[in-house]
Image (cartoon, rainbow, N blue to C red):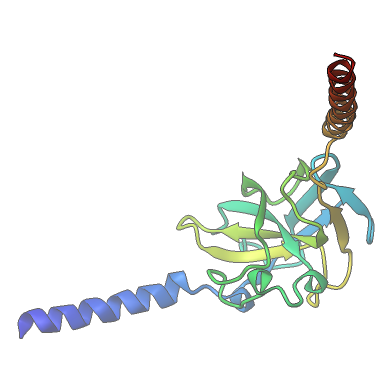
Length: 204
């Protein structure tokens, strides 16, 4: 009986811990960072080539000490609503451990209240879509406690586009053309030799 009671208490404690830490919701976070990025509205960036300059700082209009528990900042590239439609694998969820809005990590930095800038080259595996940038703030337990983003609450302003790599490369195209030309020449050469052999056989 004592063992059963211990198991029940352990289960309740685990559930409480999961609720307190594992189920952090986006709606519970304070927007305390001001985040800006270099792309202009609806600018198209090429994956693997173009750079994004991101800057972030603490919102000084908030009360002093608000950021006392802040330890790290993680910048993420996030899908705008227009690129989430009919794509369950990009769906926004209030519970952050289920949220699929921000799937592309940019950088993780120790928290500093000001003078934060990072230049990021859009990675080659970033798909074609419309994006914004969000910064999550974490405490010493590595739990989200605050955020900031380059767009508004409805995620409709300051959006930019990324054009993915097509998968084709100039050198591959040239090699493909050369191979095709070689194949055609070889085919004609084969028919020419066969015809010549046939004529020689008839002459004999």
